Length: 465
Image (cartoon, rainbow, N blue to C red; front, side, top):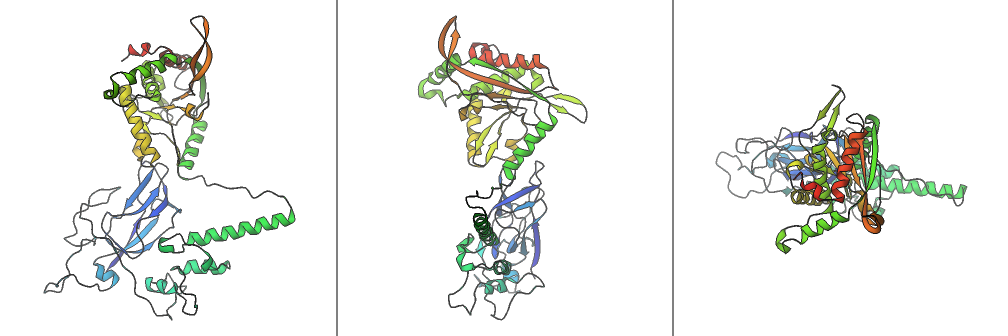
């Protein structure tokens, strides 16, 4: 007899309390192995594939794609034990042993031959070999068998509900009685709805989307009749996922940190010339090119060594300033999922080339949505190059719980007094936003002035290398 076990959304770490279902990797009726990924979810930090700690047959899924679930909410149920016990007898691939037992296929969670379980996310996992994934289709149920209000319909009943024998136009791609009921309550023709599930299956989200479309059309028509020329209703966008996490963090920064900003214009002509010389030295054998961002990051590391007050955090409970021993440099990166801040670990131990290579690696992972929560947390100072958006200046919001952020505008040709004469130079605006609890304006100004000096005269940086 198979045992049905419930798998709940696990704690994904880093204090995350919820996740959004992006894509189901299994269907009801699929045979899954222990630790096989069953769903892809998006947290406020990253995209994560969640493995199931049980092996057996998937009997139910909870939540459609796009739904948001709290940690601890049910994800799916699995019939654990032999596949035959869960789904009915299957054709044998070979002779049975004389005692009537069946050979193990490695998909069950129980049994002496299934392998030991190891840690994958939080307290579960295994090293057992993965079983071959197999789709188990329920047998057709009699036409007279219908779902009742006493509980969820069996798989066979749901399959039968997809076909209406009285309708000559054939079956509708729906297996859920709840989806049919929802469409019936709102007067929708399921044949006019395009399903987004596998093989065109109509999901609950498809019906809900159709309901919203009908309601919006009715509202717009009524408004047009009552007020000709009236504008369309406003759009509402949910604050969740990365956008929600950014909103919460920035709001917390504004609530808790008494910040101040100072800025200065700097002549970056010598820095650009130094970068060109570095990248041309040695020809093609010199390795990857050093970016302007990498040079600015190395300058920030040198400045933080001189002004460690800005590489700190405030412990409000203990009423203490904690000056951090290492520099973990965050940098702002814009992606399709929104603004993220990957962190270059131990930046104080790296040269400009190493920092540049790590920035490139993390930026590529950010664009592909493959950054892990660990790569997005633990920063001690942030560098924000908003010049890539074609703007000159800004007043950055500190990345809580850090104490400062350096903003860099675009580098562009401007008239500048150089050696007593007016000349066209490459000028950049640098902005430093800092937590006024950790230092006063003299320290912040000293930090920013040192950064500007290194930009204007890169030789200044050589003293600290």
